Image (cartoon, rainbow, N blue to C red):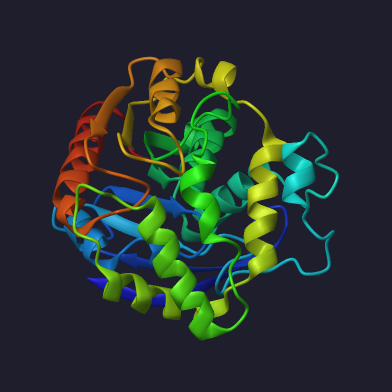
Length: 300
């Protein structure tokens, strides 16, 4: 069963609007997918893989992305200054984005869920597990890091030549193709047509260049979660690519090392992407964690 795109109103302490979709049996274990930017960055085919493994899947647009609320009347984000230690241009933090996410669960009537976060979404998922532990049945952190500036660092030699995104639709699509070539998975086929098609949809649904920068500044302003992660008591899976140039594999290793009992899966040839060939493997790992957690944790 699939439900088309919907919008939740007055979400969380910020009372924002959040666009979301649900698919699968609503009585199945709920899995909330979190990713940087728009929900369509989670491919539909990957969502189907999860549904086929007995899961109820929810994905959504973060604040400042797609059809959720944007924050244009806030300070112009200065990522360079933030990375140098001046985070005065931050409009919000990962804690605010975590509160949005928990607010969405409230609107949907979900007491607790299984969190799956990729990249920025992994950082938000970690923050939710730290700040709202009772809302989390299991945690999967993919292609992410705990905020320690010495781990999960980007390879600027690899990603720097891509440059900033153009403002026009055609230019943005081409930029996305170049960017995904730079940060993608060298061990797997690069599907240029799929990347271009999704980039066009992202642009049309409400691409916000400054919103994207505000999210990046929020990451820097939120600091290091490592010590807080050590206190988590939640079934955890960490997936990372050995070939990730956007977030070095040390980020995944550090995340798994910080969370007691976390399982670490490192995949050769995987970069900072979700290649189609790995959807079944990703989904199997996640479903195994979810069903294992469901067997020992009361549902709410």
